[in-house]
Length: 311
Length: 178
Image (cartoon, rainbow over all chains, first blue to last red; front, side, top):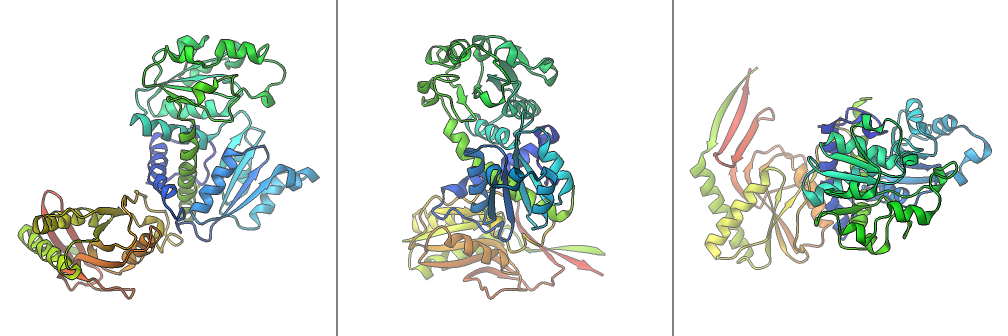
């Protein structure tokens, strides 16, 4: 098995076998992070550039740790320290980095499609670490890995995704992935947060949280992303919390073996109550641990497929 | 080019070899204290379990058995086309100060064993690493030698050795002719 591509830009590009292959590889790599010596020589001599045009703690650290545990050389570039502040275009930045022969470039950008545009002009593999409101494939993969570990499968599960679906690349990647893997997805949020025509992606829309979490095996709470909202989608944080926040009272109506997920960072007391985020159903920190394994798998698979010259 | 398949060890032969390997391992270790087996994926996994069962029959003691997947330690990751599929290493006991017997079905170039030793040492500092194989087919490319050998089989590089240890137990050699 191998990936049929040089880049991982979107879950919508991947077929079910490819997703399964990445998840199986990631599962095999979980054990490396539990060793005393958390390092394997697989990617010795490979160079990974983390190019982050947008703030990130979790994803950037996760890719950096993943690269280092696989023995790759990892270089981090953030927007504030890059030449883009001097007016360099994305394509020029890409071509200049390419001239230093990296094997993999990990890109986060506030514009949807920026990683895909970069992938066209460089021979290195490009991994999308989140682009605008488009996709965040490694997040969806780590979410699916977490669900698979806890539930033993993805097929037939009911997943509720609550929050600002329109602006969420996490939601979009998860919807594509979960549906491909045979799960059913229900979304809920204020009508201003639900994109028109989202039913065409195969999801069910609920306009209140109670309906969405009824019978759900997994509740995925999204972060309220103030940085992506042009103007108000809802009156106040307090009103959002009252209407769509996950608290203990609502959790009591959910299935007894429900999993609570959140891609982070959490706005405590807004979309999720602290006692839910820290409670027994929460797998939020498992998601973070699995992120490292998923990213190790992506780096391993892509640095192998490159040599075959397959694009 | 046609091929001819010949049986080298039948089920009885494999079982006798495993019995002898088990006795030799116990003898060289002067018992089973401090002993652990680690099977190399994929051929060494069943074999290591079979040896552990035989040791239990002989000594009445269950020795720890682990599994090692050497994929991440291969020396051809940078030259191959696609990276081989990974499976996990499962060693859930401390290898520090233990006598570890690495187990594989077929010993050939020795590159797999090199990778397994490097990986093992990332898990701790064993007192000693020994190597047990069902078949030694020669053609070493590294200075590696097995401590316990089920059967030595002279081969040509074009031959393929098939060791089946699941339901049907047999070791065959597939020789190419012409």
